[in-house]
Length: 338
Length: 280
Image (cartoon, rainbow over all chains, first blue to last red; front, side):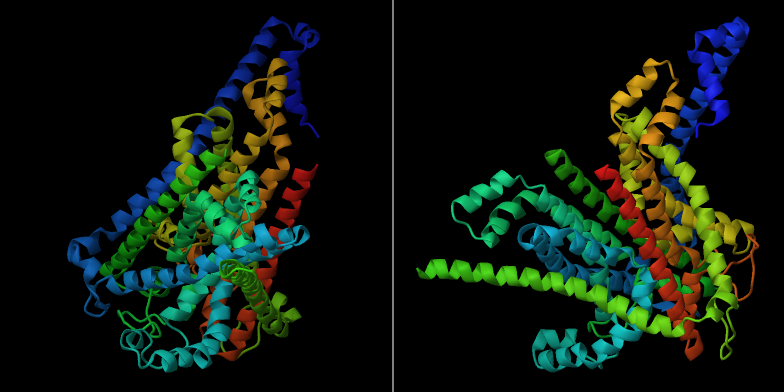
């Protein structure tokens, strides 16, 4: 399977008899060629590694460049204005930012406890032979493309919520002062709550698999010592495993949060795309990514396009910070383990 | 049995019961999604789906042009992204393992790995679509390639680091130049892992929609012209599923089924490959 030309080049350098046959000049030439190839390869790999940095730089520069017109026109008010009016060309990012943060918060609120419990099940309770299959099944959830979550959410999950969970929430919390505003209005099916729930399902595998990995990395001696003094499984998890794995778990949670913040297609299907900040979780809303996905190709006028790119810039900055914290946390736990 | 002891036992039972319930919930979601997908998708599947073009509303048709479009975009993106990713991973594992630059690149790469894909779409729109003045399949492929690169960089680096140093030293002792040590010895030792990485990247981009929305756009007709808008399965599903037309929605489900099983098959093959590597 060895390419013929490459072998001959190496052979020239390695084998004396061939070298003599070629003569001194030919040998020097061959060695020179090897040196050139070596240098070229090294330079190429370095350029490619720099390319990764260039991509990040390119993303930042192009987003800033594209959003300049909007930022110049609206200034910092862009961040706090709710209006979004393509006709009068007045744009503010408050509703999408609010929607992004609230849906992600709902997602984490649900996915983190469930994900941690699954990780506990996989590391402490589950029979050995079942661990791998269940682990893989949960990770398959991460493999399903987000558009599938979208179409499933729109046609199956949203109608289901409209008939079951949402009327239930309205009925139960309708008379309680603060909660009644959270669950006010008719059950549309689509809306902020639905988007948050779909995101929770999508983020679940990230939280689970990272938590499981860091739980697995807890030294068995520590757990055995705790069991030895008579701790129950839960007490071992609560007082030994969780404190040891805390940093890693936070890293995994932040990684999941990064995903939830930037998730586009699934949310676009079920959020309803309404540019307003509503106190009710059942009301339609929008997120940054859903706004961009819905409106970008239809945006007429530079200011409209530029406002959408400015939204993208805000999203990128938020996720960058969250992901950087996640990576830093995971790096810390890796150092401790490794 | 003291009350304290009973309380601790009860607490343990509750929490363990909850963790079992959580696992069943997680598996339940997977089953719920796949079951609906199979149910709706299979009823929409027919030979016409693979042989006819996307129809106007109300007419019969298939998904041939988006399927071909998706294939072209995905293959092109992998062809662009893989060499860059492998070379960058090579630098990080082989030349600059302890460089400051490598740790910076690794950090940035990990962030790009989970950066929102819609931002990648905006980026390519700004650098390719806007200057060229029109949407194009090529821009879509480049956008997908930007998503491929971090995945390949990560797996290549991880796999090359696992190659034992003795192999490199043995090859170097024979007088083999560094570039040949890497390409003929290290790459061969890390081959299975690197292929896994490329497969995972392929699986990841074959379902991506967001970066294609305003780069490759969509195309109602047959087109293999890379300089023109190109249809792709995810964007067609997006358009058809949100439409009020029943025929389009049925096609969207069929497309969703095709994509999901392609993606799941790719990631299962990748896993099997990685597992066989660690066992041997």
